[in-house]
Image 1: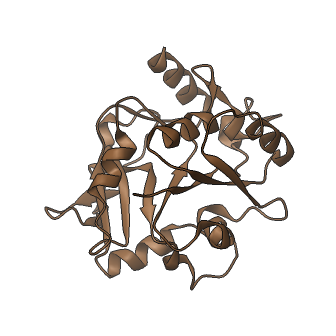
Image 2: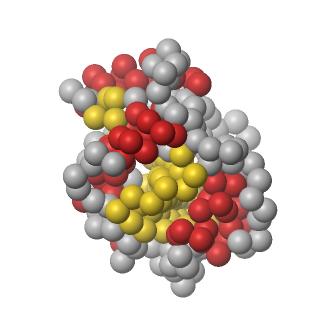
Length: 231
């Protein structure tokens, strides 16, 4: 079982303004609960014991909020106050905290309905053939997402990047990841897409389609829609 997760909570959330004028995106509330608590509570339900949370924007306020939690997982801070390193560099910086075993990496702007989403993702994980396993949702069912989709899914669940104008699946903000994949990279600002590209070349990037309804809380309109869905 996977026992450690990394929660990507360092971002400013500029597209969520004015909600993020005075707080970071992780502390924006939807359904009466902050986005970071939505994810941490999901991790508790899935049996995760340790959560490495990276901080940058309004870092003091976020750390203070995390200290008020009365249930697990155990919170470990990866401090990016000096420089925001994005999804790739943030993982590289956190490597000493993550350990060697596979981990969950979670975006805090991913909210969903449905039961056992993370548990089912972990059941689908096969470390013998997979380097990375991405949680996916159908593009036409993704609320708060207006893009053309990210991936095609082969019969054996391997992923292929979007062909031409559209793809049927979008990354749903959670994945299983082998920390060793980030070791060759420098601690600089970069997207985890660079690591995905290597896994794609090696045919080691796989996908798992979630049940339930997935919502991306990326802007005020999406926040309002998600609020309505959760209520």
